[in-house]
Length: 446
Image (cartoon, rainbow, N blue to C red; front, side, top):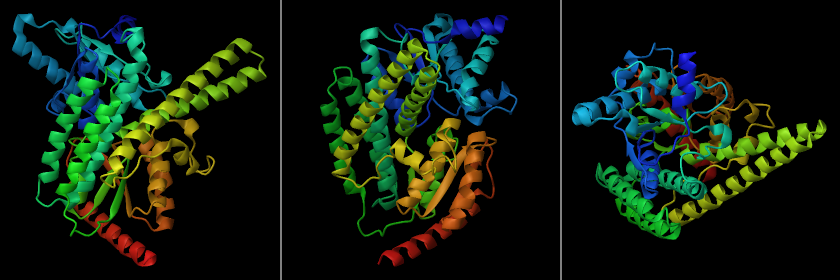
């Protein structure tokens, strides 16, 4: 019972005031920009170094856990141990909050913070470090983390930061395969990321989004100078899968760059897509509950579910409004691929015949996203996921026969921290097939 009590007491929505919040790196740009947004609201947010503590993460797990669970555990252990070593007696674990969100449903992601809590409690000196957790069940509401008057605005600033991170990533993926000099695109991306972090930190709290957009627009405009127009278009590869693995370059062994090295241009599913999906799914969940309450004549519950539906509808509308704003400004200067709208992804599931959003998990997004890529003329699909990931395994089972009938190359890329000696050969074969698909596609459109 003691362990259950500590999960309740030390995992939840704790005030960020006067604490150092430790943010795990997932996508580099998204983590740094969200941390910048936090600092703009007066929160001491630090993005932890990643992958250096992987062996520590594996040491305290059995191997049956999801790979991202081991990575994030290793990151926080590495960071706290280093802080303790550097600060000595001045180190106070209660001054730190470890940020680890969660999600409901069958995915193991919902149990990360529970396992991390048990492990931190078992270690000397870290039991007082609490875990700040948000959940997809309430659309990642930050009630309890910040002052009431700041909550809505911070959430929306953080969302804009995530969309900007998606833009920067897509700028990199669109310029690196066509760069004039090797390494030029990544060097520019690093500078652009620093610029946008400073802009978000400076202007986000004061709602000066137009100033942030103007800076982003200039960043994207200058990226055109990197591109060599003499390089012909390369096969377009759409990447889907588990959000952490496809976003975290170290854990997927820099798969996007590997695909580029073998001649492709890659578009990865965005981080904002997941946030939009959470609002979309919670909106429809509230609608289903309202219909049930109406049938049961539970008027109090009916009013509550209708309020929930309206709140999620407003939030999703706002998210799409901001997303369209940012993409419109960026696309004036660089022809990056636009983000998916969630209702379009659901339509790809053929009224639930292929899969259902009611099941939850990223499988619905990955299946719908892959088919949406195909509709836009992509030449291959890569499904990236942790080894043994259930949602991505379901995604693979659904997608393989569909894409085989469409004659669109498809490959699974599962990771668990080991290096697969045949991966490069498999990617090379896949890219050869994608190049053939591109030739056929261009010939048909000529």
